[in-house]
Image (cartoon, rainbow, N blue to C red; front, side, top):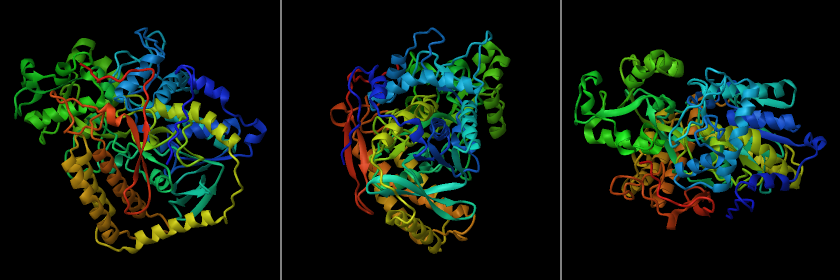
Length: 637
């Protein structure tokens, strides 16, 4: 497999501008002749579908929810980054670019990241024009706050519900196009196969989750905007419906899967409280602007937080990383929390928690100011824990939140399958080995509103596409594959639920490929996961049929894909013999417990190529070149 990133030549600040001039265009009258399929209608998918329909393309959009408004993008809380420099604190496009490269531990493609930073300034204008109610200062100007890994305030926000407000903006644009008949919306449809004709992506096979009907949808380009795979851990902050099935179908049809071991653990989540839990709840990183993180200095100290005097508290992030303090990047803050708990200083009944304390900020600013900034987050915490965070410190602990790995794409956001574009969290392109806070919303909207509409036009203008009809052999083969897989799941008639397999998978992946990884544990996981896969296909029980609503069938298909993805994650983690960002190999750390990269051997993207069932995939490499930044040991001290 050849990995050609198609990075334009020239100075980094001119690459995207020149590339836009060099790309071929589609005549406005001809755009009506082309059909684009968009799978997923979160921020990336909704913005892409709306923008391409506005341009004149025929668009069909698909989501498995009952409405695009239910996409997981709605759960994003803290904010969206943009290099506007409204605070006049030294921010710039270059600084956002460098912070993102450094935050990703120098494992991202420079050209893509710089384009993201450039595009960020347009996103805010677009969203304000749509009516997104960003927070404003007293005089009416847009407000900013800080997020991890930055020493400037560049994060725009709408209290603790920024994702919801941004999604409503994209949703309104999408609904307008649906109303005009330019977008055909297929809700409650799940993509179960990619249709590839003569090496080119030309359609998808979906299952109607209400009627069970399986149908093919054909077009001239396919866009996957299906999010990340964090639910492979079972317990995560992701919505329960989030899955990897669309990406995994594409991977098995020839799309390379890049850096699957790069997963992000978010440091501020409500801790696990019992085995009955099926998901975890995020507490926004924005809380670290005003909250101080600490644990008792003494091991096994079970006193209530108000009984522990100041001198007996360890504000460990402020101690270890004085330049950034509580706003150290997520991977570093998460490992520091784990280290504190592993040393016996964790808080709460399980000992798996640290305090996030707002007492000093409330004393300095007043409770009303904190309530104005974080009121809905405090209310959510109180409802879940029955504690009042205005009076008692929050208890938090790291949890799976985001995945930096995803399908490999070039500069044009096209995968290794021609015609298959991948945007948002579903691709690997912009965050390296660790995403900085408030950058996911930025990438999703940059891809959907401002990048894909250009690059997909270039594909359609230059590709010579044959006519494909529903009776084409490759279309029929894809439909048959879906039918056979569905029947296989229904016919096992075993004794275990898909959820029980998912829980066991999550325990394996969290234990061996979570915040810390080691060769012994990864090897152990790679021995156990094929056994679990075999047990699944011989003992899973899927009641009902495929001819109507069947959520057990939906879950079983997704869990089967998660088990296979888990193997690839562990294989990728085992073969990357270094520590970088969220990938922390315990064998590769400095004396003070920080990640130790190996730039000589691993300054590259690992893109895995599927070669068949039960065969080891091929590890392809895209070298990363750093011409405009210099490789350096990442330090936040």
